[in-house]
Image (tube, rainbow, N blue to C red; front, side, top):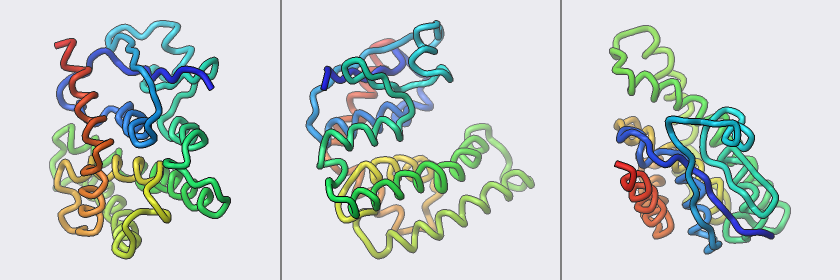
Length: 212
């Protein structure tokens, strides 16, 4: 395996700081104790090299020697291959983690993002758009609440699935969207109290602050 290099933006506006998805990768790397360094690309000038690594002009991407990986979910699955701290080695445990990775990204985050965009845009809460997307999110949160009420982590132990799910849910919690979901809120609190998350968040905030 080669040197691990996490690439993110050199700067972002204040509003998304702490929620840029390189945080998920930083968190996983810190949990696993894998050495890495951070590189950056300009936020305001996305050149051909950027698009060669990330075809949508987003961040993050991770290079592992001569391998370049984009999309936070794919990166975390790759890191799970390198560390049993992030993903079990036995088949049943790996399958449980993988299904919850996809659930976090597809079933839950897909419901969160339209709702979050309406929040960011200041959409009035008495519109049909708000009602429609809020209802979809509530349905997903009700199901997630039932799962988390009976377990500490999604699979048998903390894994990349929890990094993804907790990061998705904490965006909802940022805007008090978990007020009626105590198990989800407690889960986010457990996950974000972990030393690896605390360090990852502090490092991300310091990285962006350097360019202010």
